[in-house]
Length: 623
Image 1 (cartoon, rainbow, N blue to C red):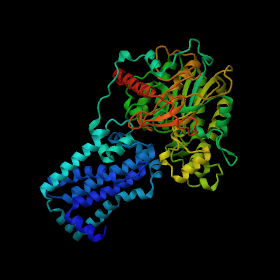
Image 2 (cartoon, one colour):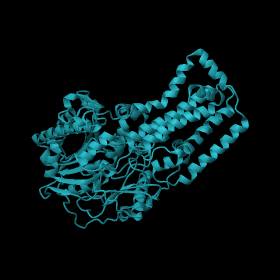
Image 3 (cartoon, rainbow, N blue to C red):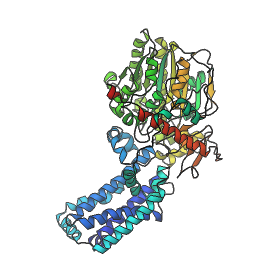
Image 4 (cartoon, rainbow, N blue to C red):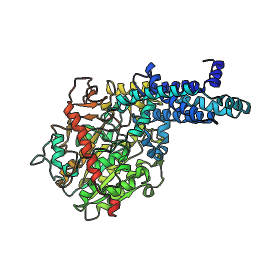
């Protein structure tokens, strides 16, 4: 479009000019988000919404039309930009509900900025030009004068009516789609954003009397063994749960040109019980969601982080369970306790106390708080004090230095990686995880030296994925393909390690290849410690005794309706029929293993969990 043509169109038909601008921005968003990219249908899915907004301005605004056009343009541009950036970080389409996350996003601004390709900022180019030109008094007067022209009312009404009809045509037939990305592509991004505002409806909760452990086990298709293996072999021992930041399972036994990336983790894997098909079940709250799932054996909420949705509930939990057996309970994290509303969560799950930034200080800070070196040193000192008491303890220790975007200081980068890993997220990730592994090894040796290790069951797992597929560029995906020897898939992305250590002499080192998830840690640990779960509802299963079958519903990082079965990851489409199948083995075999019955049972499990937590009383009321 020539400058003269653009100027003429702006002065005579601003509604068309601004609509064309928004179309170009929509094409950018579709290029980043949707696999097929933009097509001619993009215009029919995005422009009608834009025209509705601009027609309303033409209809109701007699003065300051240019200002209203600019504001509307800026708002819709910001929505598209937010959608792009959120997708790059989470792999989902952002909605208005994420506004409650704003304070968390500012805290992880380095992570967000690291995912931003410079060309994304072109989406604001027209806004900046208009703001600059507005400071040119003569040009500003010309524009304001041209915008004072009133559009023909019949034209505005006709365009408004047709646009509204097209929007309804895009929205109504696609409301039933399970996959939020598919739904946004079918409706159009702006239509989808509007739809989420007006479509929110109350969940159809199951009656409290119908939610029993027997019901959950029936839906999961499992039976509790009469004489569980390893029951009580660690009775009376301390419990230490290590939650490792962004640790994915591919790191186990990984070497880059003869450099062992995780030597300490590899040693632990070989000497203990290692579960290689273990998966995250977190959502919007990431690390804090992992804390919730592990400590409650329940699923994350349908919207928002568990710390924001469930933190006021009187939650049955691992800390409360162990406190009933005389345990002292504490959790350790170097960030401020207000981050992700952890202070409320810790009251809900019943930790006796927490140790946060106030305890660890600002020594050797990396990203949000003190480094793993400081975390482990000060935690070991406190664990020794707890170990000297008469009763056993449960401590959850949450590492953080290997946090996205993994740009740790140079003095903590010990690997000599090949040049092809330079200035890549994959290379930075390996450096950060290598540092985390080094500090983990030092911590374990410290626990042994203090006499804590021998009397403690130690459970280690990754909190969530570290390298999202949608955050990687082409070169980084090639590096992951080099590491795996095949394409890096969604199944790989959410696969995290689980290692159970030091439970008892009866438990010899073993590698388990059956399916497990974070929701399974509580019942697994309870069995080892000999603590009954007869009176505590849980959605997980003991991984040492329920090996034949498992089903793991997923939320947020994968579309609604996605789940893992014992054979594969199923990712929903509009529903079950057009879903995608990813084998857990990663061998590329696309043979369908899961059934529609499993799909329905996964959804039922989520509803049972949502309903159960909804019926729980508030600890704030009790307090």
